[in-house]
Image 1 (tube, rainbow, N blue to C red):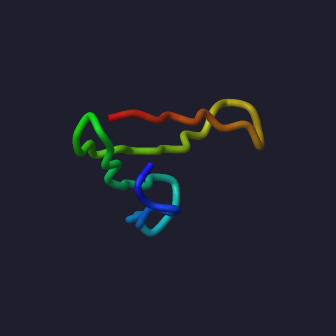
Image 2: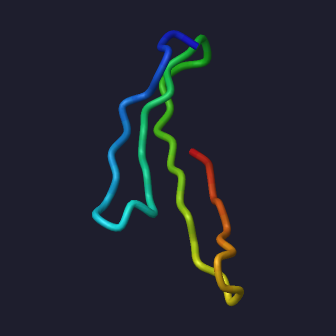
Length: 49
């Protein structure tokens, strides 16, 4: 990892975040998304390219 922290972009509800990961294999756009479930206070966490 080149950087100690990533610069994040998010939408207004703070449930979706985007950042760029740069390393020896190249530059990749990453997304993190929190999705509500049918259970109160339980969320699904999605992460990927």
